[in-house]
Each structure stands twice: as C-alpha cells, then as structure tokens.
Length: 99
Image 1 (cartoon, rainbow, N blue to C red):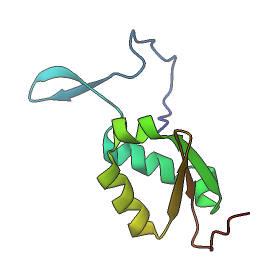
Image 2 (cartoon, one colour):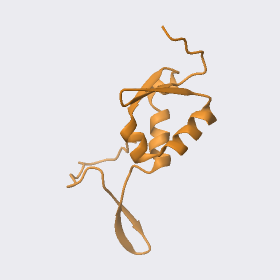
Image 3 (cartoon, one colour):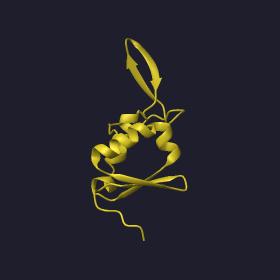
Image 4 (spheres, helix red, strand yellow):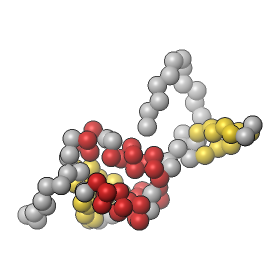
C-alpha cells in the first residue's frame, strides 16, 4: 500500500515497521496485517485485470495463513495451484486446462 504525502520521506531503521499511535502512547506494529496484505494482493493491476499472480507459499503462511487465504479465494471465485514453493493464483473464473 502506498501513501503519498508532501515533503521528503524520513528513513526508518526497519522498513517493515510503522509507527502506530493510540491511547497517548506510541507503539510499533506491522504494516502487513492479514487483511491489508490480502487487499493489496487482490488490488494489484494484474489481479484487477483478471490475470495471473504468484506468491511464495512461505509469504502466504507468514502473513495471512492458509485458512484466510482459501476463504478469500472462495469469496472471489478464484482458483490457485501450488508448484515448487509458489502459489499461482488465477484471478478470474475461467476454466483451467492442463497442457
């Protein structure tokens, strides 16, 4: 997810950490919330055009979990296959024919 703002960007020591504010104190939290990760995945240009996208099995397990990932595939009517540590996601409802 990209946020646009005016002025120079400040570099952080850990690029995967953002600062969250709440209840008068500052804490660190991950920008890779499962809902955000899934939303970003399926809002990519290729997914929006109904094309094929690919992600590592490790990333799906780490950021979302299989149950949530499969639930989102079912909700959207998409299918996916696994091969050699990669998940290929067909972002459309067209039939899949092995060649």
